[in-house]
Image 1: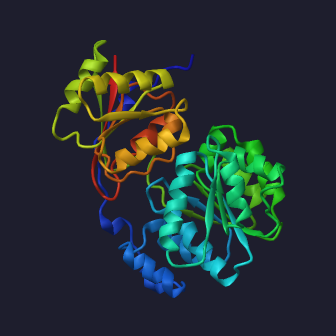
Image 2 (image 1 turned 120 degrees about the vertical axis):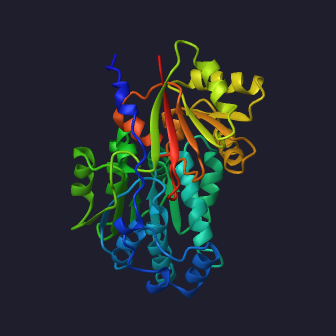
Amino acid sequence: MPKALDPRFFICAATPQTEAESVIKHAFSDFDLHPQIHINLAAKGMVIPTLIQDQALEHALAGKDIIGLADTGTGKTATFALPIIQKLMANPSETCLIVAPTRELAIQIRDEIRSLATNLPIYSCVLIGGSDIRRQLDDLRRRPHIYIGTPGRLRDLYNRRALNLSSTRTVVLDEVDRMLDMGFVKEISELMSFLPKERQTLLFSATLDQKVEDIARRFLSQPLKISVKTATTSHNVDQNIIRTHGNKLEVLHDLLRKEEFKKVLVFGRTKFGVEKISVALQRSGFPADAIHGDKRQNQRENVLRKFRSNQINILIATDVAARGIDVKDITHVINYDAPATLDDYTHRVGRTGRAGKTGIALTFVE
């Protein structure tokens, strides 16, 4: 049994950074992109790039290998999506591979690429576990330009000879630290061995530990390292503890009844526990639902869709199921069960305090 984290670690006042600390040097109009891409960016209201986009786009467009150190929610998807779309417009016979740790993140990447490639002849498909493989085989027969998937399903489809990577000249490894934490090192190594030697590789990670550095050393060529990491947890998150004295569910009810708890992500340790919290909240009249590994993929997608569209404002999740969730307006994160590791805590807290807003993270302590 791992030693519990010191509760004092969960107490930290928000210290929002000023704009002066992050100087953006470009506008999207400065980058050499297809005219329709510029139209699509404008339609999405994307005029000024985020810090990772500002620093990495020029080099990615030039075909360089990149190690990007950035959290979820910093705009990294567009950082690799824009160069991919630009490259495919110039070389429509090529394909691109994007590897993500979770089904939810793969679907989010697909949706972002679709919006950035509106009215362009760029087609993508999602190849993930927990979904009908027959439909994915049909998608591959239509010869999409971009394959977006999780490591296990991608390897399975390649071994079935359904996934052809011979023309894949660009590969993205997104949230590599998460993939390695989830035990995908073998699958990643195999997938990379299937690819042409001459390629561009873009690696993104929230942390750069020995395992991530090993992947970068093995599969990237003279990479440019770009880091927009500022701290282990967000400056924009007020972090504190709540002492529960054994009545956790009652404490949770009292918090959720407060008006300021507008959009809340609650973390539980186990699939069973998360479902139990969800059912209890629903019975008490709260607009809540849960995502965890025992739910089918279409169920998880439906719950996330309801959370994004504010049909529900309380989402209960396990750490694994919540990876890849990128919802910008979460006001509160509640650690109903304390995280097992500092890395898990950092990941949880990072779900709030996005887009310059201040978020609140509360951790229940017995």
